Length: 254
Image 1: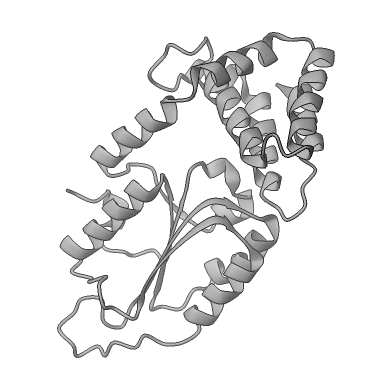
Image 2 (image 1 turned 90 degrees about the vertical axis):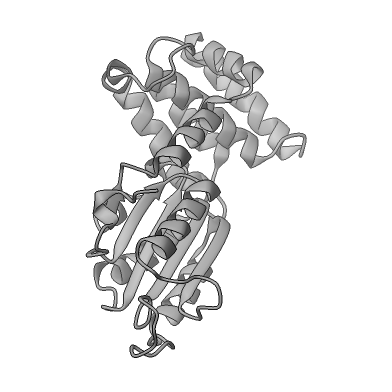
């Protein structure tokens, strides 16, 4: 499995990979096979998985980062003298992103960070600008990850299509119905996130749900709506977001 060119010499110290646990596993395999950096039993190899990465998680990573590597450089391990942080997350709060900024701007020479998230829209532009984006992901993982993203519940896609075809007034009514269900604990915030993903998928494709690849015309035609969804995603993982307000913002801008 060849790694993307940007990972060939690990010249950068902070990377962004769009993917999931499979992407993480492929990355670990690449670091071990191509860069000879062992993960098992390596006290300087940190693998963390988060539902939502919070400011407390950011503080923990900062503490781990500030201690020098435990493995001596003279040991027969290419990873000696390095600290590897692989952070897989489904969401990240704005607080946590702002907390990470300084660390990503000036990481120690021995540290390498790999942030794995399901969508680059989750990150603030200031954070994204500090990361080297690995856009040519590991081929097999990339294909399977995209197939998984396309396997959205057909009923959910129908709801998303109806939402997009509705008037703004009707969309706001639909938002209220969804958020009322969340308040009554009949649904969860994850249902709102899944709904946003279904809308996003349709907007990317630009012309319905049958396309297998992202269409450039979808990106251009629906730029405003995609940006609105990106903003909603940025804030929906915060500690106490107004899901209703975020979905209303999307309803008025798609």
